[in-house]
Length: 207
Image (tube, rainbow, N blue to C red; front, side, top):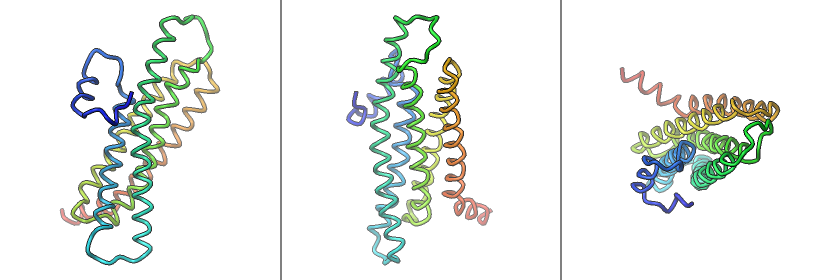
């Protein structure tokens, strides 16, 4: 599977079909990658603007752009990984011992991949603060859209994690995953608050 090379129309047709994959986790990863791309674009426009910036701002923009690109590429890879994890889980479930109380490798992976998607989206949100604050002003709506997309993707991935851990018998594994999900959720709330703080102030001033 390589959704990065699949036309968006074909990808959406595949989602809206009887096929099991791509499904929620893959869709969340793609949406998160789109959010990263929008914030990355905002940084690039700022770097190419015909105005001089302090060296510190230029460096922050370059670092944010690099992190956003890494996260974008990573999320596309995780979209493939999620589909593969679901396919692997289905193949095991079809021939599984339904009385087994052990958490299988496939179940761990089907839970771990969306958790990693959420972590990658968190990286997008943390870098997005620079994109919104220092990015090209005329592209601010794009950066804000990127933040909102990444936030939605993160929350969707965390919902999948919580849903999947509800059925796991291995309390230790499930508890560890849920704790990590809670940490990501808290950090994401803070990152979004920081990224949109100036935007919220500007909106209130225009009212």
